[in-house]
Structure formats: C-alpha cells, structure tokens
Figure (cartoon, protein in one colour):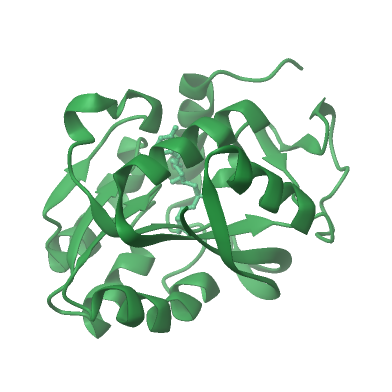
Length: 227
Ligand SMILES: C[S@@+](CC[C@H](N)C(=O)[O-])C[C@H]1O[C@@H](n2cnc3c(N)ncnc32)[C@H](O)[C@@H]1O
C-alpha cells in the first residue's frame, strides 16, 4: 500500500464513524484530563483554544464544563463525526467550527492566534513530512506565550510494527489508516525542526475504549511552545 492521500484517510474516518458511532465512548481522553492544569496556567480559563481533529467532541465537553469562559474553535474533516457529535458540539458552543481538512484550513482562517492548540491522538495519523507541516501551522497560530498540547502514540505501543510499513516507524495498523510511532528523540527533533521548544514530554499508558473493547495505548503527552 502507498501512503493514502489526506482525502482518502478522511473518507476512511467517515466510514469508521458511520459504522462505529462514538468509537471511543463518551468519556474524555486521558490527555484532556492531563491538559486541564496546563490550560489553567496558559489562559486562566478565559483565553482561547483550537482543537484539531475534534471527532464527536468528547474532550470539548470536558473543557467547557471546567472552563465555561474559554473561547473554543475546532477543526474536524469528517462529517459523520460532526453529525454524531452534534449535541456535544452545540452544548459546548464553539466560536468557530471548521469542518475542513486541516491542510485546506488556509491562510484566511489562520489569522487568529490561540493560547492553546490541543489535539488528542492526531499527529500520529500523518507522514513525517505532513506532521512537520502541521506542527509548523500549530506554531503559526499560537500566541507568543501559547502552547500546543498533544498526545502521540509511542514506539512502546503494542501496535508498533503491525501492518505494512508505509514509512520509517509508520505502519498501516488499521486498513487505510497509517500510524506513526514516536520516541522521545523524534518528538524533540520534530519540534526543533519547526522552531518549537518542548516544555513537557511524559510517557503515559491509557486504557481506552475502542469500538466497545478495552485497549491499552502507550503514548506521549507533549506540551510545546514557540521558541
Ligand atoms: C484518532 S481520531 C481522534 C478524535 C478525537 N480527538 C478524540 O480523541 O475523540 C482523529 C480525528 O482526526 C480527524 N482527522 C484526520 N485527518 C484530518 C485532517 N486532515 N483534517 C481534519 N481532521 C482530520 C479524523 O476525522 C478523526 O476524527
């Protein structure tokens, strides 16, 4: 298999949501919980955040319940995800919902600056080149004192080396969906390449619900700021 295009991957995500609905259940991610104190420090709960790949909005619900005055924007390319998450997303009251491929987000929409860019299990879904482009975009939309809070899948994860290899450390773990597996050096190098500095990098293990079954994910919690 060659590396699927962004549009092909988004189509695959839409199929996943159409068949599995709320694939990861209704509870917010571990990363969203870990991010709460960071969000408080960075914005006092009254600043602004953009969430990349918000899915059906399970993390947004947590952020809104803890930070009622946080200004929140979100990007999600899969329409079935947004349909499934309609009530969550309406309840959260986003300032802007961008229902687009991140790569088409465009200069026009990128004028805004945020205190926080948040993404749970997002950056590992891209080629290394794409991940660098995305982190560059993240850096561009951050305020000077802002930070990105991201979770990444680690080489310690049990899916590492599963499926056909699409790039170094990147495998087609699920049909049509590449997964890149990171180690601490990769994360530091990637941040360095786009002029970001690692403020916090921690290993975590998350017991996730995936399609109704429990799954252990080995990941990194990353907080990175503009240099
Ligand atoms: C692993 S899921 C995580 C969803 C959500 N963050 C959560 O934890 O519930 C990744 C999400 O990113 C979205 N996505 C993937 N590629 C995208 C792209 N190029 N632009 C915007 N969204 C994308 C997918 O549709 C999917 O909802």
